[in-house]
Image 1 (cartoon, helix red, strand yellow):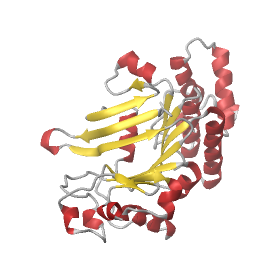
Image 2: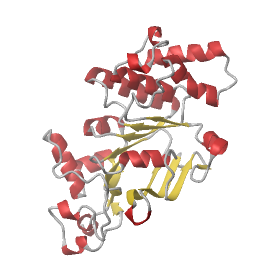
Image 3: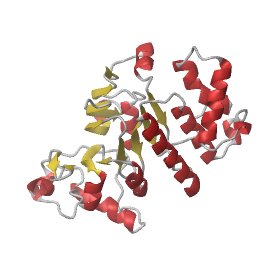
Image 4: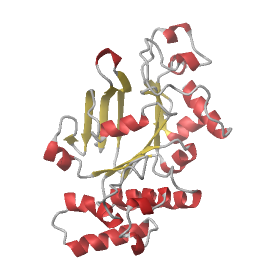
Length: 308
């Protein structure tokens, strides 16, 4: 099967010259149609930068992003718009992602105006009404502006805007973080319904490991811009091979925040970037970074996992 999304050695840096830091450091993965890849990791691990680099909202310093057989890296202007036609994104901050000058109807209809310009105005209107209904918002919201909506309502509008063109891939950056539990459950069920009916693929960024179990088939664990472990959710959750994955799972199960969170700006490190926090670190971990090598059910960047 040819992957819908293929990312190879992606690097995203911020800053200039010697002060630049790699928020995403040589990350590679593939995502097939109809599958969900969850990206997890604590604050500062590079999850949102990865999402923006894949969507070309920030220009990668290096690496290749191929979507639906088309090269996204290097594309500009109308060529990039055309290449991203089957790709949509739900941003982490729902309020900031909506133009305050646009009504709800104008915001949700905008992707249709860009990608389906032949639709008549009444057809766009009906499509917006139907999509808003699916995310739990009635027609009374059509003429409202973002400042008259709650954070949860803004997120539902953002999800409606992302899904209205029936995209092949949706990049979800914490799409349910602003929603209460009941609305979150409804949105997740809706996303899975789209996946069943349309074969939608999701690159799903979240801090909620329970959501990962519910939504994802595969998971990518990131720390300081690098992939620590990846593979099938069931395999990694049952038998994590990397100490960082173990830390995340233990923190989630005890409802505690993982201690000593990563700095928001990754620093250069000759060895494993997790070495200074790892309870099982070996002498070579400080001087030589392990490659991401295959383990049972996935792959892990850990000398101990590779040797077992």
